[in-house]
Image (tube, rainbow, N blue to C red):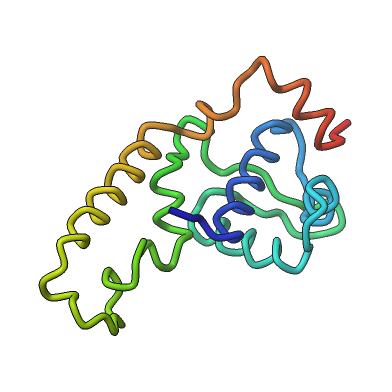
Length: 145
């Protein structure tokens, strides 16, 4: 299973906001901290705001912060909401061109594997992956004052 850059960036934004929850953060500072595209992050932040994960404040002193607590943000749900296609193989999509799809025994195996993958992610929240003992290192690595 492979998650897209979009989901990866969504998780990174949420982790950044969780580690420095005492103030508003900007897209530019998150992009700079992770050395990733600001334009790509703008789309991610827009969707996270629409879905209620974060709230944004407009204006000169604006920025964003978590709208939900880290305990409320389930990793499995976030992945389902940010991934457009969770098909592991072509035959799981509606656009399959595989001739043996109607009789292939791999389909249920891959379906079970996907369910196991998502089941593991469902067991974790943002708080679970934001271990308190790592906060000082995260602040340093992300260059958060």
